[in-house]
Image (cartoon, rainbow, N blue to C red; front, side, top):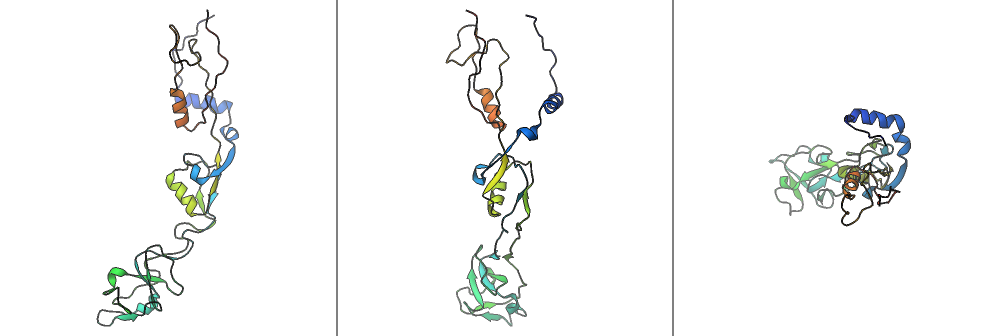
Length: 225
C-alpha cells in the first residue's frame, strides 16, 4: 500500500471552510426544549421572549417606610411632616411590595426615630424615589436572549425572572471520531507490546466543546497475528 506523508497542516480557516462546504450546521443542529435550570452551556435555537415583567410589581428598593411622596412635600427640619403608621407610612424592607396608595420610600436612616408613631419626615422625597417599578429590568414580550447565544449562569437567572421555565436550544452534536493509526485498537488496561491504547482524552475535550459523547466500539482492523 502506498505510503501517505502529511507534511502540511491545514489552517483553522481552511478546515472551517471545508467543513461548512460539506455540512449545514443549522440543519444538523435541530432544536429541543429543556428546563432552563438544565440549560447552562447550551445554545438558544431562537429568540427567547419574556413571559412576564420583572419586577412584576412595584417593590421597595430600600429599607424604610412606604409613603405617598406628596405627603412629604414642603417638609424641613423646622417644619417636618408627621405620618401615622399603618395609614400614611408603612414599614418595608428591600424587595417588599409597595402598599396601595404609596409611590416612594423614606429611607429608615432619614427618620429621626424609626420606632415612633407617627414617624417624622424632615425632607421631601419625589415620586418613585427608592422604588423598583414594574418592568424596570424586563418588560413582558421583550427579548431576553437572541438566537445562537450560549446560556450562561446570569442568562439562566434572567430567563427565570422573566417567567421562562423551559427554553428551546440546539441539540448537542454527537461526535464519533475514527482513529487514523494502525495501532489504535480497542482499549485495554495495558496495551500489548507494539500497540497503542486509546485513552479518554478526546472524550474530555469533545465534552468540553459541547458535544454529546458516548463510548462505543466501531469496527476496527484486527492486528496481524
